[in-house]
Length: 275
Image (cartoon, rainbow, N blue to C red; front, side, top):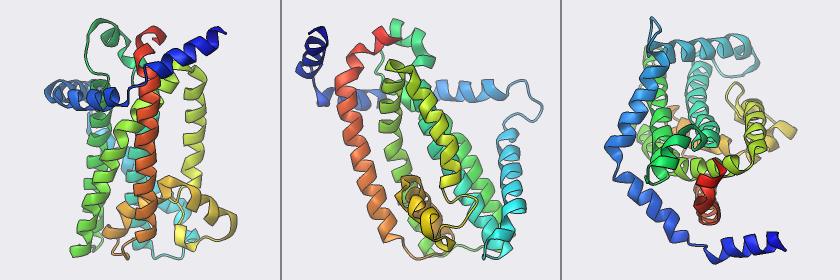
């Protein structure tokens, strides 16, 4: 009976506009979440010799290892495979990083949430900026490597701009939704951690999507991250415009926003009590 009363109480307070208002209000604190994100990034590498250069070094090491051990399994030329992996790994790291960060976005800010009446989206934006910075470094590194290997962009490369925009558009609802669920149910964080490790093998980062067949092809096709990587990677590799992947990416982004608004409307009021 008490469970029915609790659920009815949540539904009676269901207000989707409050979630969108929270996102809008959080944008007004841009200087705050930018400063917090910069501080978190600097704190992570403050006592190291290379500092922020470790972001580039670790990226190059992982890309190099993938190319070295898996390049011979692809029909692509060595140069094309390097570009394919460099871009795919950068995009994958950003997407999965947002998923993982989302699970901890509110628990890591418990003291602030309990003591300061800031919009919850502020903590989401902090994590997004913290993910965007290494992603931009990875992209810059990949483009430098590509230019060194003879890559020259054409006008089609400009299609990467809407791909980057959709990356940013889908990040806030993912972090809000995963943050609320993981704060309420601790097991959700462990589930996400296990799934994200598995996704690295199910996503065409170290193997080429177009060269596959059978079960691996169908699994990759059903994986939304595959299509996010396709819309991001295809323009820079000079491949045809991926209409099919764009349709999936846009549809998936809309569904994520709807799900996040529903979850936020049902759960955000009780967030301080779960921390």
